[in-house]
Structures are given as structure tokens and as C-alpha cells.
Image (cartoon, rainbow, N blue to C red; front, side, top):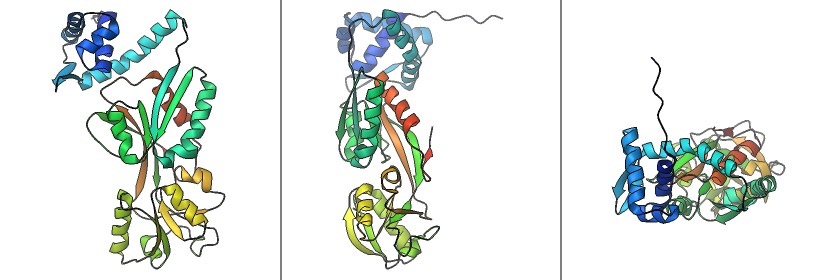
Length: 304
């Protein structure tokens, strides 16, 4: 039996996307140049045709369901094709509002932004560097389209997309007494000079528990807020540090020795996007660019 093909309504799809971006029928109507009732009718007709609820009311705003999010993602190629059919017309510069913590932003993200813009002259990137705690909040509050972070903070309204995973390593100068070891365990850090992350990092508490379990007591010589700062202090000969090797290895491997740390400490790099709004084309393009152009290293694995 031949399967019946669904018919499609472009105005309904336009209403869906506008409502996901705007959050209210009034704002969506202004965006489309229609009346609120016209937007409501289009969305209602689409829900009826699909037999699915696409929006739920939440504190005066219309919250898209997962059905709406999935449908909107499937519609991206359609609207990109329509843009190509319309032709270039008046050149409109696309802007990516990007946010990242210092360990990712400095050197790593900046280098990729440069190659991204060189390959896409019509794109513009606005990068803000802030603490990891503020990264997801910025996406949630619609101040940014995309975040790149190594902190896993799950909360309603955002989606985490992993792209890199790596184990913990000990980093030190090549002449350090432990630098020739194949691997190090928590017990090996006993009475060693240690550069530690500050207590606001969850990894500091995790490392302290591992050390306590084996009664290892290193000498804390300094506390820092980023893995790059820890590696730089190790390079100055203050001691060793237990860090996430990504992306530090790409920039510090000529000066330092990286030794695997045998402990259940793994790190993930994530893209952070909203699950309430469509992901802009430029954000999807940057995620793809980052995946394709991040150099490989001996410790981190691509998580595609």
C-alpha cells in the first residue's frame, strides 16, 4: 500500500520558528508582520495536522516542547535552501554571540575564531570571556547563542553537546623527579609540591578525596583558578599540578611533561546551546568548524 504523503504549509513553519525565537505570539506576530490571531491559527493548525503539542504555556510565555525542538531542527535545511533561492540580495552580516571561560577562550578559541572568520568573510564573532559559572547562565538568558565550556552544568532550558573527553594528567617540568614515570597514582603525590585549583572548582574536592583515601598529603604551594595558570606555575618549577590536558597540551607540551594520572577523573568539553530557541546557522557552522579543526593530542578523544 502506498504511503500517503503529508502536505506542508510554509506559513505554519514560519510561525513555529518565529514563536520559538520570540516566546510570545505578540512578539512573533511583530516579527512576521502578522496579527497575533494569525500566528495562533497557524501554530494551532500545525499541531492539529501533526497530532502533537508543540507549545506549553509557562509563566506567560510559550515554552516549546521537545516535539517542537526536533521539528524545528529538521526545518533548518528547508529555510537555508529558501535563503539560497532568494539569492544574496542585500548583504547582512551574521553575528555569533559566543562565550567561553578563560581556559578555553585564550589561545584555543581565539585561534579557531580567526580561521573561522577568514573562511567566512560574512560572519562576525562577538566573544565574551567569563567564569564557567556564568557561561550557561548567559545562554539561558539569551545573551549568547553558543558557549564552549569544560564544566558540566545541567539545567532546564539548555542542552549540552559533548565534543571532547580526556583523563586527568600530572603536569611538571621535564627535570621533575616524577617526570619519567609512565603513570602516576594519588599515592605518588605524597609530600610532593602541588599547585592546586581553588576550592570553587569541583575537581579540587574530587582530588582531595582521592588523596585522603590513600592518606597522601602533598604540600600545597599555590592555588589557581585555571588549568593554564597551574601549568604555567609548573613550568616555573613550583611543583606539579593535576589538570585537564585539553586544550593546555596544545600550547604547553614543548615546555612541560604530561604524565597520565591513574584516577577516576575525566573531563568533557561541551557546547552549550538553548533548547528553547533555534540554533542560529552561524552557531552550527562554528561548532562544525571547531570539531573539524581542533588538533589531535595524545590524551583527548573526539566525542562526536
